[in-house]
Structures are given as C-alpha cells and as structure tokens.
Image (cartoon, rainbow, N blue to C red; front, side, top):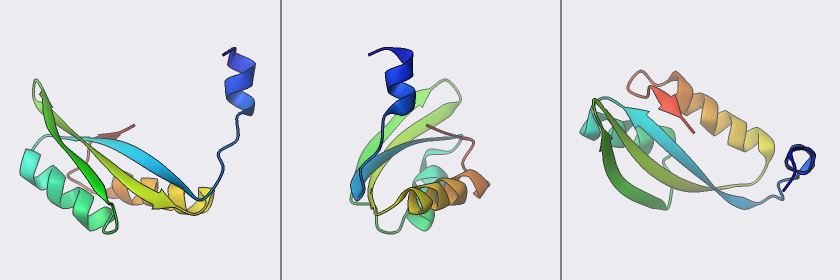
Length: 84
C-alpha cells in the first residue's frame, strides 16, 4: 500500500480497536488498563522489554471521538508511559 493510500484510509465504526500500552510495573499497568478501559474485552498477557512491560487491550469503539477519548484517558494515567 502506498503512503497516500494509508493517509486516505477510513476507519469504519463501530469497530474493534487494539491499544498496546507500555509501563514500568506489570501489575500497575494491568490495573491502569482496567481503570481506563473498563469495557475492554480481550487482554493479552504482558511482555517485558528491558525495564518496560507491554500489554494489549481490545475494546469496541463506536466513533473516532470515543477512540480518541479512550486514548487520552490512557495517555493521562501516571502508570502508562507510552501507547501504540
């Protein structure tokens, strides 16, 4: 897929969205995800990357605004250091 095609790609809602979340403490990261995404329905176990842990969480989103709101909640949580 060319770069222009990716830029013009549209996300159709509702859809399943997966966040990959990174933090320093495995248990605190898990709790932060549960706090920010209480309705997530799939959670993959943590992976360690040196001093960081990552966890993936899937959630159903109904709109771009809702997806962005969830991202912002994750981003503002003190236990979450990075989000993909």
